[in-house]
Every structure is written in C-alpha cells, then in structure tokens.
Length: 107
Length: 118
Image 1: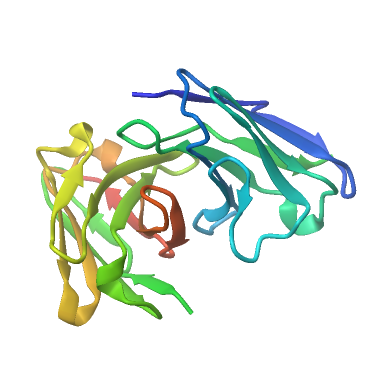
Image 2: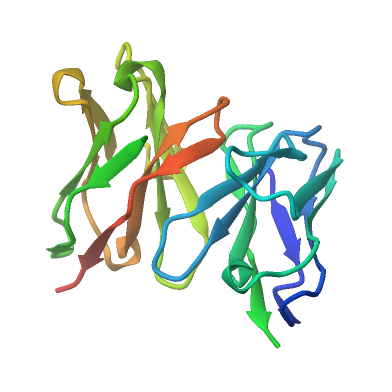
C-alpha cells in the first residue's frame, strides 16, 4: 500500500501568514491526491481533489499543487478558522490511504 | 443539502459486534458509493471499505476483511457498518463518507464513537 508522509507534523503560524504543507507519496500517484481539513470534534472536510482542484465552496486562499510523489497545500493568508489538522489522501492505488496529518496551530 | 446523519455512540465489550447506521438525505442515495473511515481518538484516518449503494457490491480493506460487513437499505437511504469481534484497538470514531470521484470523499457523517471496553 502507498504510504503518505506529511510534513511538518505541526506548523505554528499567526493569522495572516502563509502556510505551506507538504505530502510525499511512497510511489507515484499522478495527481490522485486530495486534501482534507479537520477541526476539533468535526469530521474531515474535502478541500482539494485531483491535487489542485478546489472542492465546492472552498475559499480561494486554499490551493494545491504537485504530481507524482510530491504535493503541496498552500493557505495564502491564514484566517482564524483555518487553524486545524490537514490530511492528504491518495486514491491512485488500492486501498486508499491517508497521511498522518499536519496540525496548523496559532503561534 | 447533502446530509449524512449517523447513529449515536456505542459502548461494547471485547468480542461483541457493533452496527452503525448512516442516514443519507439531500441527494439520490443510489447514485453515490458510500465509504466507511475510522479514526482512533487523537489519531489519523483509516479507510475501511465501501458499498455500491446501487447494486450492493462491497469491497473491504484486507485489515477488516474477516469481520466487517457493509450493507444498505435503499428504501431507507441508509448505509450500515457492522464490525464484529471487537477489541480495544477498535475504539474510534467511525465515519460514513460519500464518494465524489472514485475514492475522494465530499460529504461526511458527524461520526459515531465506538468504545470497546471490558
């Protein structure tokens, strides 16, 4: 199964700053990658699919990029509601797998 | 709007089974595959399996192959996840999730906490 490694584990930033989150796949997954946001006590929310396509209703400050094995989620300017845990997920190879998550916390 | 509402929290003893329901509304139930994903407290996400809500076909992670059963009731627009031979490591939140594009998940239930404890 494909292993997804997310970095860093924790990102400490202030509101208004730019956040850059990374996800590496153990083998090429083309652009078959999604990003999810999970706030405390809530289910995950789909942000990005196919590596760079924003899901319905997702603000433009969220963007995704990458292909193959290296992927990035960028939040251009952090809003208070963006402090959460972010997970990447691949669907290129069965079974679908998730990364371990990056927590974006308030500095 | 798309809504997935799950059944309430459960407490089970080791060796028992649990059945969690996921009531869908706001869309055509049989058009979208439904998945189940679990998350141990404070941990990451783990995919368990899916059901084709149209024809009832299922596919399970090898990890759960022997003790997971996913079913659906199309008249009730509800999917079910049944996990047997529970052990303490199965303590987790269990989520149903709608399939958007072949294993990307665009809508999630609120989660059901299953606690396995003697």
